[in-house]
Amino acid sequence: MQESQALSVDQALSVAMRHHNAGNLSNAEAIYKQILSAKPKHGQALHLLGVIAHQSNQHELALDLIQQSLSVLPAYAEAHNNCGNVLKQLGRLKEAQVAYQTALRHNPNIAQAYSNLGVILQEEEEHEQALDQYKCAIRLKPDYAEAYYGAGFSLQALDRFDEARKHYQQALTYKRNYPDIYNNLGLMAMSEGNTMQAIQDIKQAIDLAPFFFQAHNNLGRVYLKDNQPDEALFCFRKALEIRPDFADATHNTGTALKIIKERDFV
Image (cartoon, rainbow, N blue to C red; front, top):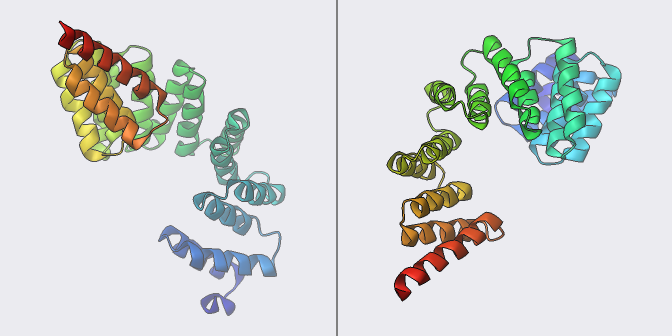
């Protein structure tokens, strides 16, 4: 781009990063590529070009670029963290975990890396360990809504519902429109037999995210538990309308239909 032609590499990188942070990915990409034309082993430009590839769903290209960056700057903690993000997207969870741990070894003050590590540990159902990671993230970034959510999720999985609710409410302090939290609050209420609260919470999740097919299915489960099979059937069918291959909703539809048939037969 013309605006970068008369600039030093550092100045061009600063301009590109401003474009990147503003969401102008095509402008940022063009300048990163110009920098790499002049300095093919510029570690930051390689990393940030990889981040753009990741944001553009070109994950294999992103991994290649970020790994090139790390071959130049092996202690580049942010690049290790983003490498983990790409590996996670590619389903390579063990490698992602190592990448996050490496990021933290080089810089123990990256809140996002702790939170990302927590997500991986949750995938492995290591909820106590995940909780420790989220607590580290929150200490570094006290307004980190996603880390409070992650901690709440692990506490919920450990049946520590009161603590989970506190963390979810803290997350909502910093990020009010968080449908996953309302869905999870509803699931806890359902587990405790409070179907009225469960319906209210899950409906709020759906209001915030109308295509949240899991929430539609969960709302149906609550209605089924509350002996309202017609309402449940509507919810299960809505989930399948959004996600036709959703096996859980298919199974639940069959259950609701069976209950309705038995009721109407009587």
